[in-house]
Image (cartoon, rainbow, N blue to C red; front, side, top):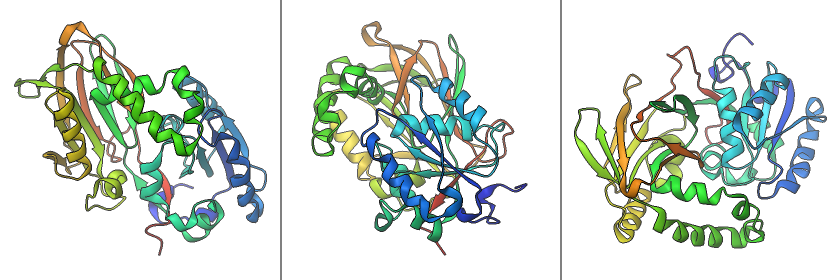
Amino acid sequence: MSEAIYSGAYRPLDLERLVVLVNPVTTNANMWQQHVDDFAEIPKFRKPHIITTEQKTEDTVDKMAHDVREGDLIYVWSGDGGTNDAIQFVGSREAPNVGVMASEAGDARNFRKATIDDVWDGRPSEVLKHGRFTSVCPLRTRVEGRDNYTQLALTVVGIGAMATGAEILDEPKHRNHPLRQNLHTRLLYQKYLALKALPKIHDLHVEDSSGEPMTVAEVMAVNAPLIAKEFKFDTQIDDPDFLVGIIRSANIIRLTRAIMSMRKAELPVCRISDETESVSFHLIDSEQNQHARIHLDGKARVLAPGSHVTIDQVTGMDRSHQPISTITSRLAA
C-alpha cells in the first residue's frame, strides 16, 4: 500500500486485518464483542487483534506501535479519550498506512455522526461494504514554554472553561460512577458535573499573535467537518477547515449563552481554511492564580502560565504528521 489509504485506490474491504482498540471502562464497554461478531461476515476479519487502552496516552501509543501493521483497520471501541489515543498514533508520520473506523461506544459522537449513517449503527460490516475512505485532518496544538509538547485532536481543542469541566469528568470517581454507565442517566450526570465545575472556572489573561491583550473564559478551536452536523455548519467531511471561537466572560449566564450560540452557529468565529494559516496566543496568567487547562477531545491537562500556544491543522504538507484515513458511509458512491 504505497499510496495513502484515503487516496481512492483502496476500498474498506481491501484492508487485511481487523484491530479493535478497546477502552475497558468506556460506556458500553461490555458490548464490543457483539459488534466485532458482526465483522465475522467478512472471513478475514473473523479473528481480530485486540488492543486495550492504558491510562496514559503514551502507553497506548506504544502498544499500538508494537502491534499495528500496514493495511490494518483500526476499529475504535472507546469514547473521546481512546479515540484521541488512536489519533496520536495514526496521525504520526511513523505510523503504518492504516484505516480508522468509529464505533458507537462512549462519547466520540461527533466523529461518528460525521462519518457513519445512522442506518448502519450496530452493523459495522455493512459500513465496510457500502462505505469508502476519506481523509480527516486533525487539529494540531503546539505548546511552548515551561512544558513543550505537540498533540493532535480530532474534534476540538479548548483552553479554559471547557477544559476545567473535562478534567472533572475524567476523575475516576466520576468516570466510574454508576450514573455514567447508563445511557439514560449519563447526560444528566454530565450536566450536574458541568454545574459543579462552574466555581472553578476563571478568566484567562492572554495576548493574541499581534500582542493585543484579552481577558477570556475560553478559546476554542473546532474541526468544522466533524462538528458540522451538530453545529449546523455547511461543510464536507474532507474539507480542511477549522473554526476558532473566543468566549469573553466566565460569567455563568454569558458563558451559557455563548456556548449555546456556538452550537447554533451564531457565535462570531474565525474560519481558518488556508492550509498555511494558524491561530496563536500567549497565556499570561489566570485569575486567582488558578491553573489554566487545555483539553484535546476531552482529555485535559494543565497549561502553565507563560505558555505560547499555536493551533493549526494537519494537511499532509508537514512531514511530522499526516491526515487520518477514515471510513465514511455518508459520502458513499
